[in-house]
Image 1 (cartoon, helix red, strand yellow):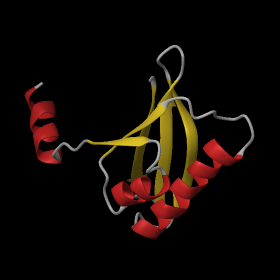
Image 2 (cartoon, rainbow, N blue to C red):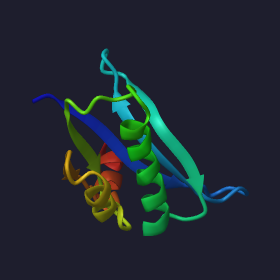
Image 3 (cartoon, rainbow, N blue to C red):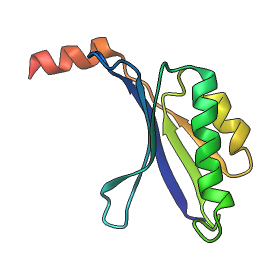
Length: 114
């Protein structure tokens, strides 16, 4: 069975607008990234991830002929702030969850050495 990989993450705004950007991206046929869904919420928490993931599920499964679930879905994420349990709740029948994390301290050290 082929897989369809999703990348889920969020980042916060530090400027005057505040908020958190949630994004679901995937690879296209040429291995380029494209955005499937995105939104801006007030903060990153389980409730907001729940709302975002439920909308992603509706988009993939409830819109006729948009996505025929012939592929195993793979979500690549850090599973922070309730995201892991929310993915398992909405995509338990069709997903593999890959949790990735990298310490900012390690990343910062590598950047300084180069």
